[in-house]
Image (cartoon, rainbow, N blue to C red):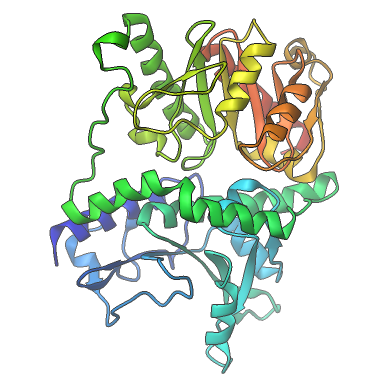
Length: 419
């Protein structure tokens, strides 16, 4: 076995276990390589697998109905298990699930007694990269099984696990405020196809390089402003470092999953610095931050800025007091986004920041002018808003304040849900 495959499995198996919830006893990771399929053995400690915990399977290719999928994650995360137990498949009510998973998370009947189990699995994965698999029923009639998520890379498959688990939890929590509203199936499929073809190519390319070279560190990207005419000032470099720092904080605090969400800092009246599109926050360097013209949206360097750059720019145009903007897919605010509900603020201290209500922006597809206009309208003069089927947006005089407002807004969502 090539050491590169072992290192890849070790890295992403550990990533699976770094969630705030258990991934279950049946959790495992499989990858398809040029030499065949390798995977972690049943019962392995995924937090620190050894070479003897990895085995080559008697497969040339992974048994996925979706073409291009070269990694699979098996898990038993708590909320997906609850949906499986209650025989409750769920539709995408948030754009992150629509993008990486697809329009729905189905339950496939994978019981050995089912002679059509193969067809059931193929159907579940026909338009989605994640599904719950029924393997049996307990004495009380509850479903028993696991969840499978696939990806073009191990990273994508693991992020799929986290997004699907969050989506299951949000679906269940939304019952408290009227229930989650599903995204139009056509629009969910459109987002999924765009993601597969375009959005995640940058990160997928980095992961492919890892698999081929055995290196797991991101190669340094050229600075967006390296040339002599626009060499970054010490202040600009400091702000680039801050964007990196707070991108990592968003991941650490669970306010974003994978590459979803975006941050920006206003550099001056003409330029802003934004996070790049489709790159894992934990891998970003100051040189990866993209310098974007607020008025024209033209950008410097080879890395593309976030697709929501127009939203950030419009906030700066409409809010001279804003020095930083953050868009996240944080869990509790996402419950309100999924249910299409504004967020009432009852805590007196929080009311000093957000008033008595955080407004709901009407839904529009990601990256569109309509989304930009709807969000800016809902934000108004407040420091945060809920984005229907997306998440939330917050701003502040600087990145520190914007981040604090994100954390506080998420806390308001938690308190309103009573959890």
